[in-house]
Length: 592
Image (cartoon, rainbow, N blue to C red; front, side, top):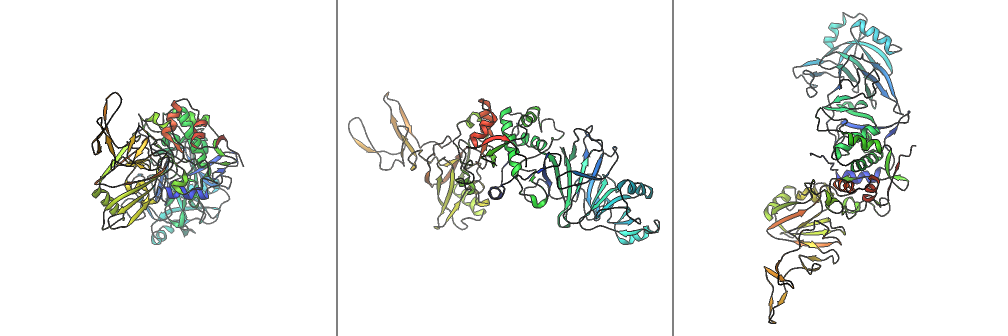
């Protein structure tokens, strides 16, 4: 089973914690809650860059034709025009000279690529029109198209690369005027042709909306970039640039497009319900991309969203994932009277971490539920969790080169590492001491200076060279005596034999129990099950640095593998949510 989990940019998450305090998605005029998902945009985290051209293709037997218009402030769709029901594919392009080869989505270009061109000059017939029907009738007679420009309907014909071409054609249409659009204009064409179906230009800050299906099918579904989506699409040219493409979709349909991609699509029902609640709550708070006209993007920068899937039968929503969303419809996670921040990652390795230690979040006053918890359940999923334990080993030279390549300690070499553990046993600070006396400090979330990024690790739950902090003493210790008392090492340690003779202990050392059984005394094993609980620091040096750890992700909030294990043990989704976010409760969305 291939599972894609979200790995969020820590700096952005920290910013989100500071700014996202209210519901961000829109409640439409009909009472539905709508989510705006960025599918293509010029911003970090977007699944696709803003596009020169974007195709839509109706899914067979799931709607027919297209309606063009815009959304009002209550997200009611206002129709301006439409195609007939026989129109299967349309493409949206900028109103500047645009070339394409065939109908392939990647072939659009604003420079001549040898393909078909849709020019930016047109011939406009005299006068304006009161409605689309009147304009469409005259457009059909003239072999042209309907344009909606600054709030009025017009009829235009032709598409010419330059003014000279337009002037040459003007003689065939008496009284016509050569026109173009502003740098915010958008054309809708019949895919694979230069046939313009509709032109839209309402200036800066406006966006064209396309609602697939003119037959009002109950479950209209449309292909975009190899994935099927419910809902509508909007197109906007920020600063006159390429197209930002947004899927406007009902909240519950959005969650159905998240749950099976952020978690195993056939995982236990209660685990998927937990994911649904977390995903629904998360998006209700988000406005991080509002400046680009959407709430969340479709990548793991926010939450992975892939609509209703692709043509692959083993990828996408399942009956159980859809059921999980349906049975938790409208359910979100609350802390007192406000929506909780429902962060999650793949695996915590045995304990999540306080968001204060990861992102600097105020977990004392504002977000007390984003505290770390010891997780005794996640190990129940170890058999399917490829990162339940992991190892990354470097020679001292390899570690030096890795850090040098990232701009740290250039011209010197690693001398030692000092690890600071939280009370939950996670590394919340890692200091590198260099041979020239300098020092670099790494935290869980400092971009290239983050612990995971700098050292190539899956999580912040690890030990180095087996050195760990004792659960209660909080002091360095590599050996345990009688299973509990920690020893820094064997230096200065003496043993007494049966004849009363004492001698200095050296490696290898052995212990003998009451039955005469001898066992080699070895350093305490890596803290994969909480051996570093209690906090403290450890100093490590040597010719090799072996990182032994568990978990995968930022370690704040819910563990997805932990939710799997808890569901297998009979816990309900509300219990799982409330375990990972202490002090919260599951309840219905409160409508404004």
